[in-house]
Image (cartoon, rainbow, N blue to C red; front, top):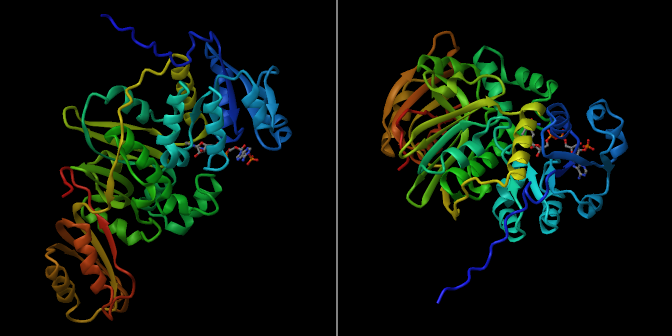
Length: 438
Ligand SMILES: NC(=O)c1ccc[n+]([C@@H]2O[C@H](COP(=O)([O-])OP(=O)(O)OC[C@H]3O[C@@H](n4cnc5c(N)ncnc54)[C@H](OP(=O)(O)O)[C@@H]3O)[C@@H](O)[C@H]2O)c1
């Protein structure tokens, strides 16, 4: 006997609504650029109907508001948006609160959500996606990683058929701006001040320079590329603020430069993931990425390496990603969505390491360092010492052959206690073309 299949309702799309009505939440850098792109491109099928912001009169009277059609309703009440016939809420306020609660209300009210909020998606993405599915609406966040670089849609649409085993990239434009200017000779404090003046860095830059922004993005990328759900707080981070000019000199001698790299590699059930300044070979595409550019290299079992690069931030590049997401929602979002699994995470990688020491020079220091490394099973590969530094404050570098980062850290714990050490030793992973997690 033939059984009757229960009909699945189609997600709300342009076919249900010839014109998709859009509300922007947050008329700041990205929100105002989305309004500008929508107005300039006259994107068919999308109509901006509402703009929400606190103290909204200030926004309505700003220069950025000039492009906004007179028909748009400006409001500082989120309930106005909920009660309206808006189809898609574009969340561009940032942060977890109140954005999370409001997005839940919007989804529960049958409105799709487009957001560029990496913290929201890194920490709450899976549960928001479930809520969206429950209410048969869409949650799309292509702008949450790498701004205008379509790495998320590229992975969803173009790489869904591969088995991605690892990814690495530069996903924080502020750190890339700082480190690529340091590579050209500037010092950290000057470049950070410039970055703050140019609006690339916050007055409290720790989310960028200490790696928290990048690790949220790494978690989102790992979820999409490797279907792995990671706890962002469990991902190892290392600040770029301890990098000095001398490190770029030594890196150059090793045919490398230094970048903040976010990397993840799935090994069985364990995810190796880390956000840290690393030595990057000058031949790697990551070394060619300067200023606020972003770059992500995705390695698939069948398709090999795919590189995404471009403007990782900025109002207009990010607005392009948001408007592209809006179009995807309007057309029914047919991207590949595979189930994700929770994964344990470790910051350990099997890699060569760069170790920089600053010592009050005395005989026997190198053999003591070598002894501490040998004791844990690590081997020195090379020793670099530039001329011209005083013996009482001598910076020099040891590179170690590939081993686990935890092995090196074990040796460094005892090396750091040596009387001659004037600073905490700096330990950086060195990227190789073929390094593997163990
Ligand atoms: N900027 C970029 O290049 C970029 C790139 C990729 C992703 N993103 C993401 O895009 C989102 C927006 O970034 P943005 O740079 O456009 O930020 P922004 O310039 O600070 O804009 C945020 C806007 O939201 C408003 N807002 C914040 N909290 C609010 C609240 N509780 N109630 C009402 N209005 C509120 C702000 O109003 P006030 O003016 O009153 O503060 C401001 O107008 C963030 O999630 C960010 O991570 C940004």
